[in-house]
Length: 59
Image: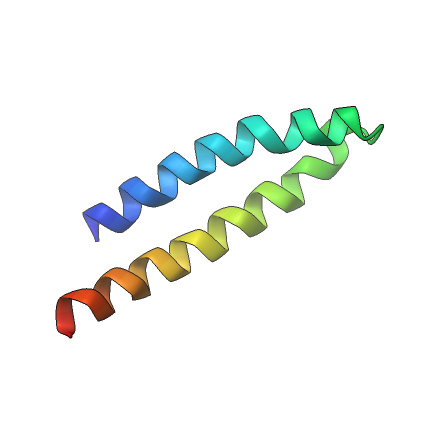
């Protein structure tokens, strides 16, 4: 669980930095749009990090 949390927090930090910059360059207001994207990326990565590490340990 701890390793999945570390992976999730690193990716969340990167996504929270990169996504607003990309949205700003595309001409979209990052304050409005980045929340949904960052939340989605963090949830998906956390889900697959936890299940992927669990599968690697069990197999």
